[in-house]
Length: 321
Length: 209
Image (cartoon, rainbow over all chains, first blue to last red; front, side, top):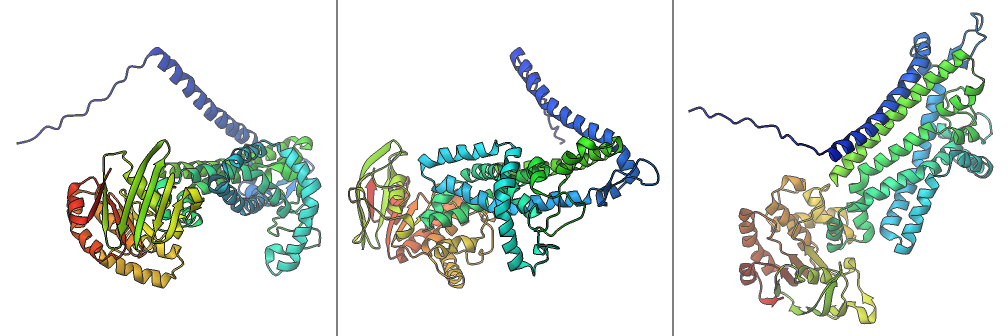
């Protein structure tokens, strides 16, 4: 005997007018942000397309930036490898410094700070996130750089057997190291904020289980809270990375723009894509302007990829919660 | 050796008086309706919740006495809790879960591993050491939870409705195992249960709330 399987009928929901208006309104808002994002990418691609056509992959791998004279005798040469490497190096330094601090601060705020301190400290952290980057830059240039040059000198004298701590000349100002420290301070609030949010969701019953077996508070944090928040922390760090990669003015003020791929973090040479654009934009020839647009597109795509990865990781950590 | 609690326990807006005394080798069963404070008493003994007033003593050691500003932290009390909802650490395998308390008390890795294997054998799970908690049935998970409490050789073993969250088949197997385990346990056991059958088969004293 053959059995007929009944087909599942679709559920049709008849929405009210208010519901329809609200849905249209929020959907338009969401779509608008996507449209703006698409338009920015489209604009950059449109303006920079000629550069990608003329230079191909060498625009990404090249290390020269010369607007040329406009004729065949001195052709323009554009390559952003040095700036891309500079962006990555300073961002990595920033994360190496900021993430341990972010973990410590968020754990302190969530599990150790007395209630009367927690709220003001959280508010201060949020406030730090709102400081304009030019202020960071000025502070970095006038206060941080003189101090950090001394630290860089010490690092160089102790660890110059490690290649990245070597310098070609004993000048320690305006290095990727100093830019990285400044960026660390700038990404600390966002990384801490995400870490704190994730750590606060650690399951209370698992923490009690750790206590119930003789675990100390630090033991419970290590066993329950930190493994639980690991992917969220990575997400927070990557959001910070997104900001560090795109930072312009602050980096421009504390880092020498030199078109040379430089992994020696204490050397006074570097740069990043964003500060390249900021520096050259005012006096660029029309053709160089296209190259800057193309550089902007590359930075845009890198930042977008980092943020998309961060969003994915954070959402995974939330679903695990 | 004995455990004595005389005073008031509570959490949030809830509070109630409680008085109990249990000797070594004895099993005290606490029964009562939902919300009567059974688990709160257990958590107070474990140091997860503080006593509102009165005294909690284990032998001559005062664990909690608000009047004297005394509170011994949970990690310094010789007691271990088996929770109703198991609460194994999901990212650790079975042996690491069982060894957790020993490691927290500073026992070295090899010793902790050896003692944990022994405890797993005691609950009939000696071949499960490298499995992840999610690979075990509810009953097996609860046995791991029992092993990680027993391995600490605590003075006080606290069982918070250990049969409540597992399926009927596993419950029968665990009920069969539990009297053997408790018969060899030298310390004080406090069992919270809803089921009169557990009280009858496992406990030799009873506190109805």
